[in-house]
Image (tube, rainbow, N blue to C red; front, side):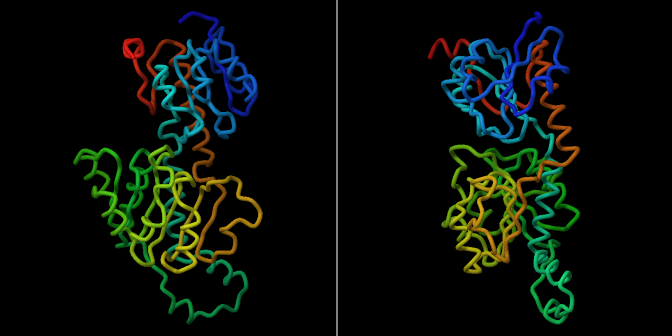
Length: 330
């Protein structure tokens, strides 16, 4: 491709952070919420904001008539109007499986933490003079032989399934499109519909992307479908779960516990609704933020941008952009 290409970055870092990796002659400029619509008019590639502060709306995308790729340097891409990108014929890519292993490990950690009453155990051990008989009498549960349901089986969900196999858990999954039988056998995962997944899952791990179909999916009705005393683990997006309904289910004992790494509002405000719930394990959205995970995200994203600038097809595309003929016909 010719020199003089333009990359517009909405990520919260100086342009120099990306510029050194770009083909010779490429300019990288940093866009703010105020000037992004103006700058994207000349952009060959747009880099999304991993903090999800700057939104790539339909209005912004509609002005990006030269754009050949919107690269989101994260797993989630809810800051981008996917329907508008489809209509504009612009591929949208995330970082692919860059931090799938990190998030999967976090999901397993959260599951074990809740099953083993980790918060209470740490508190008692630190305080000393704990009641050993009370702990022996307590219903501390194994992951072994537990039925675990994974809602969503993309790269993160598959990484979770792979890590469940050595524990001897029974793994169920549900996703929009069922996987081939060979992949199910490799992962040791059984496909079931959503109602069956909820009814059978002693542990439910949410690994879905956030979109119009998944927002609010796990509401009070669906939480009530889980077995009595089930555990919920959310490493996806907070908006997928009705948080008020979750609090009620935890307070009533309908669910025995939950582990959350994501929330509808981040950071959580002081005095938030989850504060003080003893059967809730909270972490500050760090599931994928390991040292290796961050390197993988950066390298996958940069390599994809550089490849497109050199005329190569994009990788990790998450949308279905219309081709030129379709747009003209429409």
